Image 1 (cartoon, helix red, strand yellow):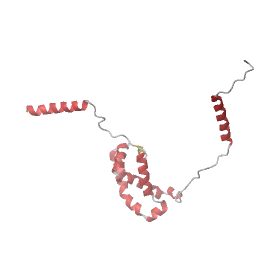
Image 2 (cartoon, rainbow, N blue to C red):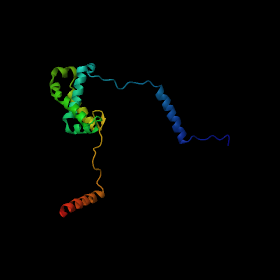
Image 3 (tube, rainbow, N blue to C red):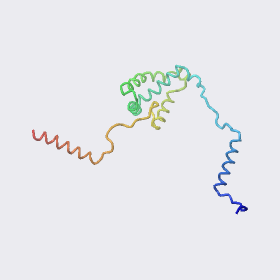
Length: 163
């Protein structure tokens, strides 16, 4: 028994091959396949005017679309009055900023970016960095709903008939 050599199992071969591959992969030089890209106006986005334009564009897109607005008002932690006042104060500023040629030349067309990203975020279940909360209301209608409705109709109907 001591002189008999055990044949390697498939699992031992797999572990040996994975360890050799891991060492070979770790020893190889990392080649940068992706190079970072920057838009020509990347440095101007730090400009306060461009930050304001971006904020106004994002909030206005949410405020002017009824679906985005409803999701924002439902998900806003500050309540619907404060949330709607934020949207209502930013929306009137948007058309002038969107048509300002100098602002668009300096900052890029942030209104187009705001429309595109609002749609992408909404598809992902996000509006203005808030996760969209489910709408409150009646859940799935169960068998008790017709019974409750019939009881209410009989009680109130019986009261009016008896008068």
